[in-house]
Amino acid sequence: MLLQLPTTEEQQMRRADTYQQWKRAAQRYDRRFKLDRWKRDDRSEDYDFVEIRARLEQLRELRARKDNQALLFTLNEGIHGNLGGMGRPALYRKAKFGTKKLIIDYTEEVVAALEHLASGRVRNIDLDDKLDFFQRASHCYGRSALLMSGAGSLLYYHLGVIKALWEQGVLPSILSGSSGGAFIAGLVGTRSDSELDELFDDDFLEAEAAEEGSFVRQLFPFSRSRMSADEIWEVIERLVPDMTFQEAYEHSKLHINISVAPVEHHQASRLLNAITSPNVMVREAVLASCAVPAVYPPVTLAARNSKGRRQPYLANRKWVDGSVAQDLPLKRLSRLYGVNHSVVSQTNPLVLPFISEFKNRHSVWDIVRDTGLQTAKDWSLAAAQLIQKPLGRELTISRWINTYGSVISQTYTGDINILPASRSFNPFHLLSPRTKREILDLIRMGERATWPTIEKIRTQTRISRALDGILERFEDRLVTIAQKQQIMLDRSA
Image (tube, rainbow, N blue to C red):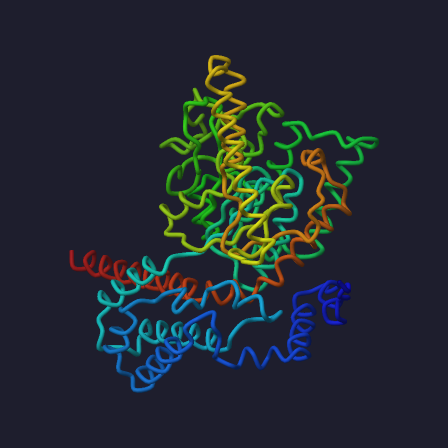
């Protein structure tokens, strides 16, 4: 078999310093290999282009006629992210940039129809009916979330992923993290839009990386020793504002979720956020999620009481690294927020060699690999259960077996997976501090890994982002109306 050398455009994509450079190279690649024609041609066996074309034309006609009642009825029939199979991964693997133009046009027309109905120009549908429709549409359509794996000191890769998504305006409002991913969730989810602009400024990142690198050289000039718990807390205290989960959401409008696991083996793991634990402090939650069992001491969480004072949260319980129990808590996010679409930033070196950025690939190698991995997982879980029975009375051994079973049985991928180009991270250095150069390289690695997924994320989250924005505006409008009514009541009194 002849080795296929990368094209000039592929080399340019790999060397790109910005998303715009990557985008131009990807578009040149598509033109060179006539993939623009493929994008303009509706036809494909991978989706029902006839159904999507018919629905697109129907929506366009109704909006042009300003037949608002019929438009509302048509949209009420269902807004689906995978209508006619238009979300299938195969449709996003053909071209380097984007997918079928029909899919883009349909998505944009749905958004245009939603914005039209939400506008003040539509007066023959009252506010209550509009609000009811948009709430149901948002609930039925679902939402997207970004989930960041446990990463140790590879956490800077996650920061690069978020930086790329943020700069292109496609960062999901729901963020989840465990271990190193929890630190990035806490770092980003406690900042407003303007503060994120400052955080992602290249000069600021350079300065922070220099400070961390200096810290590394002072403490570990001759070794890759792991950071102590006190040193981790020092970094968290410096970079994560002292807020509760509720305060963080009100400040950033981002829903941050941090996974923690109890030390007691009979207790269930927790997903901390503004819904389940609004008064818990984010800093202590991050530290707990970074507390790798048998390496760092477990952590007592903190919370604000009814008087706003800090106090222990569940004082008799201690918590450790959440990635052990639920690295990617998809089921809980689905229940809490209606998440049905996931973007996963995955850096766990123990699982990276066995996963792909695409789900549902059907090559011979993919089938053999997936079958082999599933068989190995099943045998490993069966062996753990068999061993646990005779050794169950030994608490320490039983706990390690439970941990092993929990790690093995987890799912480590989502609908869109952002994976580093290099899969050769040394797992023994996961708790080691990083130099300035390593930090900046990891951030850039995260950005570059994200760029090829940007347009897929943009398309697949476009409608849910529009619905979120519309509902936020409606909530603001209702608050304003309520305030005006109260003022009138006060004056009449």
